[in-house]
Length: 342
Image 1 (spheres, one colour):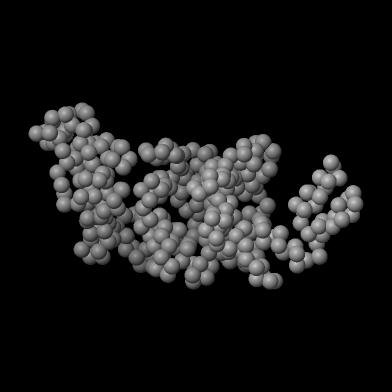
Image 2 (image 1 turned 30 degrees about the horizontal axis):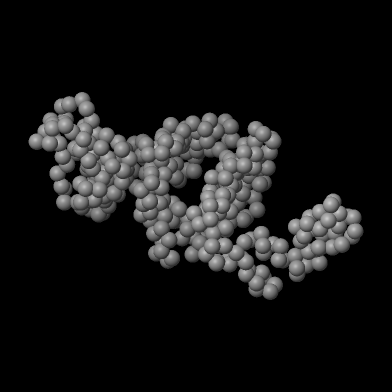
């Protein structure tokens, strides 16, 4: 019998994602041969046993066939359901938190839970002094300084410092966005991005600065803001020495030296150094004019054009040092200056 994958009743698995590359070997014998015979058509990963491939496919389809009878939470793996039941929906819980009386089945999980009450952070980074409750969290954080990225994407080779970041990255290939906003319908690949987005609708800002009181909807933005008080900059450009609070800002800055323009317009082919610049450029093609003048109401597709327009409402003038003629825009002055040069 030729090697094949029998239908499981889900065409998305049997037809769209799976191919068997056996050479006349019976499926039940695949377990005993050394050659990997089953290939995932999404990421190309190979498996020697059919059931392992079918389990792997759930990472692409997000299928969760196992559900808890008590709380209805769903899982892609049976072992995950068993672990969930043992930790959350099982009556045999032996460790109790003295503060909130919550019962927990494992002693190490009780310790982690207690840190949510005490706010204790015994592990600190020697580079930036950031503090963490768990040793594992510190270990992951240190990779931001060492630039260690042990987890790589099997599809494109991109590397990551955390497994969770790799998992989210996979969705850029599958185009999967399982989390959607019930208010505006916008979809997200990661649940935390949806949580942060929802705060735009509710105007919730749960993170506030202890120094100046300014509030933020995102904890990351608060951390970045806090550095403005300490004036600490941990990342510097090897070319010009300019310093930055964040690695992403350093990477953006570095393109000014390399002239790298990785973002291109699908309509006209124009390239940009920054994704935000490409997004703003697209307004030229779509006709959108999201930037409006507060004084006269005139709308513009580009923020830079609005800034130039605002000068028409002010008395700011750019003067020619040769003849004294004044201009409302610096670009006009530069053009005029060429007349003297010629």
